[in-house]
Image (cartoon, rainbow, N blue to C red; front, side):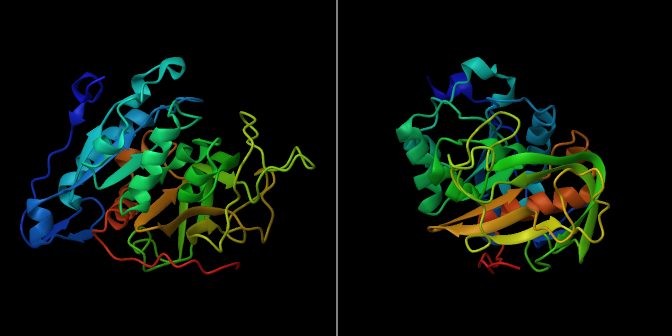
Length: 306
């Protein structure tokens, strides 16, 4: 199948001015170099859903495309969220197709219909220098490929809560994805608890996706990733949040170097309106995208257990 048959194409065109570009809603300013004015980074955004189709997928595609001109990147979206889960088509994903991009953003879920060669192409794309941005339900993607999980950082185990104010501790106040947040970030969204170890048949009820029964092949480790945000159990009312316990460790956003590439994940993005009405969330995601695309520097060194 040709690209023209499946891709919507570039849905955001960068028109960059000189000097710096300011985010008019959040006040966040992005440095714009002469190189980025002439050659915006190319970002492929995938929203194919094999398990559950979040209603925020369409708003997410629209928002990210609209953010690109001010932030130095241009988006190609395939509108995967419009496809039926039983007939997803990702045949377009090949090494040659990916080679035209600087980064891949995924807000996907499920064991997508990618064969071994396609999954290898995606992982090699990042390992050899591409950027990888994963948002919210991307943590439920490709439970059948532990190497993808290594690139992602960790897998969804259970939902922490919806429509509740949760206070996030900002563990890195210098990173482009979190430098605008101060020491804490109270926000209403859906949050995730991730698996901490590979599924073990001797403990069959542990480290399993409680919604769909997927076995987690790789646990999140602070020895591998640099955690940016985690649930602050002292400032958050944890009553009614299930297994969340005072003093527990519940990372919500992290980064890592993956080979020569960069990987950024945030659990946020469940709400439809957060993509259009929350300038702080916008700055968080744009900062992560810009870092993953190499437009801003940021430390990805893992710091180990707390």
